[in-house]
Length: 360
Length: 274
Image (cartoon, rainbow over all chains, first blue to last red; front, side):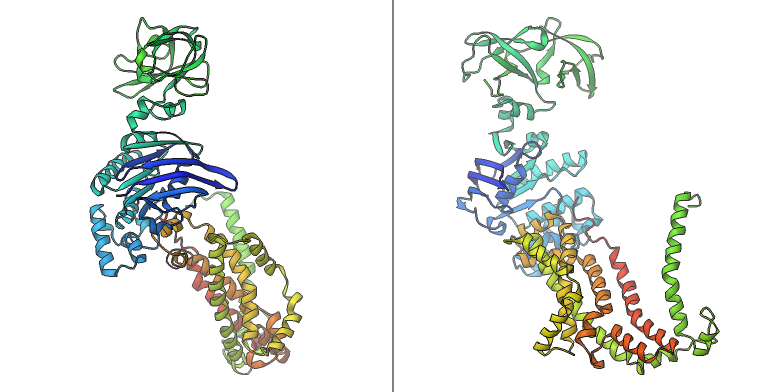
């Protein structure tokens, strides 16, 4: 169990900055998730920590020791790849034991260790099989076994579940969380799936274009996003954003008129740390689908364009005249396409962002 | 299966046509090699009264094909082994190691493939004479290795680049040095490509004509194609023995091809990723 510190770490490929200067502290034993859209640099950042890529500048410390120029083997890390990266010509047992073989462990000892690891991952019966004779979930277990057997201080997972079907993904997610509780090692998990991030992480690092947008616990990010990107990325379905203008401000609330609703106004609770805001300022209002309430007396009127019924709840989408329909979560009576509804928002549930997307 | 599309049937007919066109001359060659001179006079397609295997004995013993055959084997095996080993090391460096001036070095290797033997055979002769290697096996092996390495490098680099990068990274993360990555991960997975490569080198070296013709003048070190040339001079009128010599020259290539054919279709990387 070791901590990780990144100090002004950068990475460029051919003059293109993939990772802008990044500072990050990951505490020992923490399950941290790097999340962000494709191409945001999350996998590159993981490979920099693993030692599979060299940093362009900056320093990486693992357990208080500068490892920036050390090869992966000297960093006490183990990595699980998105593609599993199993050696196809080796059996399950040989795959698991390969790292130990390289480390020079005698055959009898490493086979015993590999068997023990295979047993903990329910792979005993498959010990002598080749990867091509395994299912996707079994291959993923072997890949995890290959990491566990080395007993590393740090586990690095690069989108390990993205090739599995939905059901298996949920199951493996729970297994990985259980594994973390058992081995108590520091784990970094890269994903573009915010549901994985929310359900597994103790700490989420949201990345965009090689920079950290926000770091925090899942609920911190969900409830208190620093900007529109994080607000939109965390939470499913994503947050609605509505263009508006400040009508009036006082110490507790702001009154915002919404362009898409012919200037109808809603009240939004002011943040304690909010910057100055004046009447007439252009803003964006963010409201999560479950915070838009169907309310006959609500100020916002919409017409249902499409419906997604999930059984216990329904998402209805209203056309807003742009490519971003308004999403509303409803429970109870299911609306129909074409229904005219009125909506209201609790002032405590709406967020205000300035024109460049920063939270106010 | 019965209702095949007309396009499929046409394709099969074309394939059969090419198959027959390719095999027919060889069949005729084998047929002629089993005839007596009298059978031959009766017509090219006439079957012999009995197979005359003594033609092969004459070619093997009197025509020195036994010596030529052994020489070809002595030359071909080291050429394949040395070229594949050096070429694979070269490939690994090009594909996975950080080298300064990699594109330039790769370009230089390609130039090595483009120069025809005729362009350098005279200076090569003088170099080997100066080294005292004329009429030795080295005169047949070393130039062939030099000509093979660019080809192996080009061929195997593309095969190596097709290996999933994650596999190499996984081995590196497991603590393997570049040599061990090559030894435990890359080489076992390149088996099919190396087999194909070896087959190419075998056919190429087995059939090589210009270098042995110029650098070797002694019957004791001549390889099969050169032996065949001089044999033709001596046995022009005895066509059955001549064709028996041609079959002896060809047969190893056919046998090796059948032996390696199975290797071509093995997909060793199945199950590696995803």
